[in-house]
Image 1: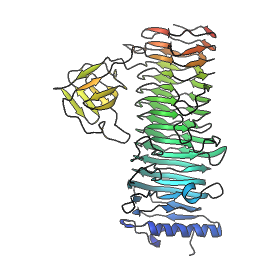
Image 2: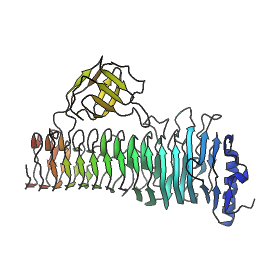
Image 3: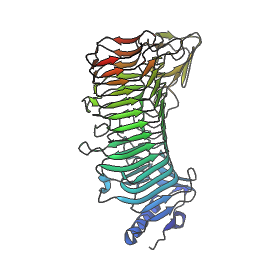
Image 4: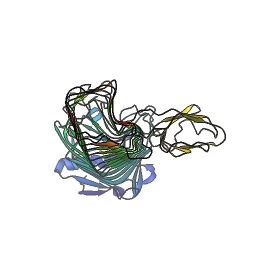
Length: 537
């Protein structure tokens, strides 16, 4: 069949009425266009006019040189469903190593996917299947994915791997990973496997939004532990909210994250760790100019990396535990991270320590940061029940309470047999996080009845600006302001070295550690060696 450069789907048997199964006609048309491109070397464009195109019970195998262009989000919509094949994942388009022998020598090229919506709410598999994505392409060269709205998929929404010379821009991914418990592979809004092209994968992810997704908002993940972590990946001007993790680096080299907002995520706004399939953490990355605010637990969680890593010029604030947390997970790299740089960040109003070091670091640099007004979790234990206690979907109110504002941030409140995490509180009301990303309630087992008894634990007595609870070797600490200017003050100490921590060698100079609630320093382990001078207390 001779095909022009641009083909109208309606002229080739697709109904777009939301009832007719358009998948068979869609597959035939993609095959024909791919064959035509292979024959004459001219890529084709498949235009999808306004309509709702039902893709039922089977994924469409994609072909090189075939672009898919809709009439706009909400105008052209692909409805994914598997009522007749409950064990079968149904991404809109797929081309994978396992199913189709995709690889460097068998890849897709010259693709544009633009201006349409993918609704994955009609796909439910009997068991979680990471292939139940919105898009699932591997090994793509010269790809452009732009202005896409992908939502309610059982697994990852945009789940494409090994993208060379490719741009992903303006993708909105909402409530993807419906069937992911948080411990499965995939389940992200935008999840990109990396490493298949070798030392460099030239990929830009920009102006994307990911909200309410089961695991990550956006992540890059090295797919084989023996592959070298690739360079060339950038994430810029993105927004991630209400995901388990906001943005995650699970195996890149030199990931650049800039001008992005990471807010209200459940575990961390930004994560570097060994949680990916290869158990390899990222290294050499730079995070700059970002707002990392109001995450339920940590702002930045970094570990399982040999280093280096640099975080410069970010606002890291109002998080429910630590602003920055250095730690290692079991199963990943445990060596001391080298050359971790915290420079010119505004680290403030976090619930516990502004910066917490729970894994060994060497040759780190803490330069010119403002670490202030942390330790907001000051409230003592509290309990109540009966008249005056009211529970809503995302809040608990005790009319008789008199809590310090924000004093319960990050605590776990027990209400009857259920628990929830506090994101903020007034004198009488606790604001609560959803029980999982994308949920509209804090209560997995149903709303507790009015008057149900509740209990809150006490906050810790010591909450430092910078707390060291592991080996810190040869650090450089210069020009930081670590204090508290609130009334009442909540950050008890500027610098704390715990009994588990140590500080060996290095330099600490020209830091202002004055104005904390209790003292400038708390050395439960004394620092050893190095130079300490001109620090104001």
